[in-house]
Image 1 (tube, rainbow, N blue to C red):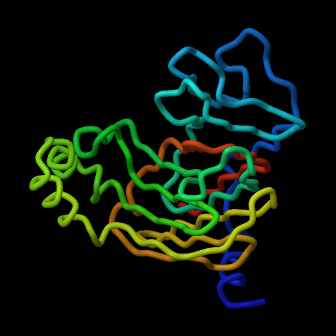
Image 2: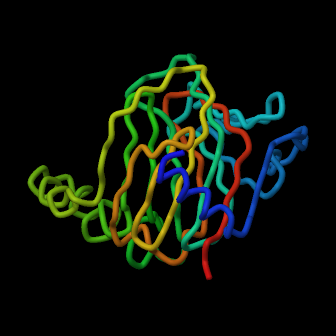
Length: 235
């Protein structure tokens, strides 16, 4: 067992489980909260469902008429902590340049950051990306430059936060299950896949109190999720 795996297991021994979902249930019919357990799914632009519980797993697929990605959100506030989820990226119109995202938001932070975005981890078959959004691209002053319509201002905004994200190459197969684990310790975010450390970055936004909302999201893809868990390491 390598040192990183040992460290992760040591953290899990002292962690407090905040929320878990194995999706072993049927949907609730005729309800906007059809996923149950306080998940909040979004709909396409024509109110088509983009998520479902299929064979005791959470299934997300972007609708053909969608003007936004598919997502499901759950409020589970934590600071230091661990998120773990099983995933399978499906070979179904899948664009290998896109995959799924795990977003963390704080609705009370919109004074400082666009839409309360705190940070994001993105997974594709070929890349993992870690983004500090709170002090990076979604910081209100930076976001205003990027969305100003001026190419010069956009370049300036992106240059201001070029150290707020990192990318690491990976090689994942479509249709195969894997386990993703995110470890937040102060300002450091570590990403494990199948218990192997894949990526790690320090940035102030990762230490934001609190990461109140967790969102599973994707664009132009189809992904299954299972065994979702969040633990707190807050003292």
